[in-house]
Length: 101
Image (spheres, rainbow, N blue to C red):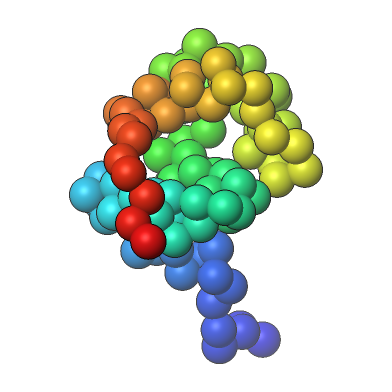
């Protein structure tokens, strides 16, 4: 019997597949909305990484694929240098802005 619903991850993957601008917007929104919830940010990064391909991201970030899976699992947080390797491999850069009150 075929289920009639999609999981959130399935829905996000479908929406972001072959849409680099949508992936960028999704990550940007996650950083803006979840600035104080690192687990949510890492989940968004994982979802985009899965859409793009974990193996390719690992190559681009010069990281071991198994280590990348572990980092993106949500059970741990990456070291800052690993985090920036992932961000860079996704073709992104982080900026700093004053906090809006």
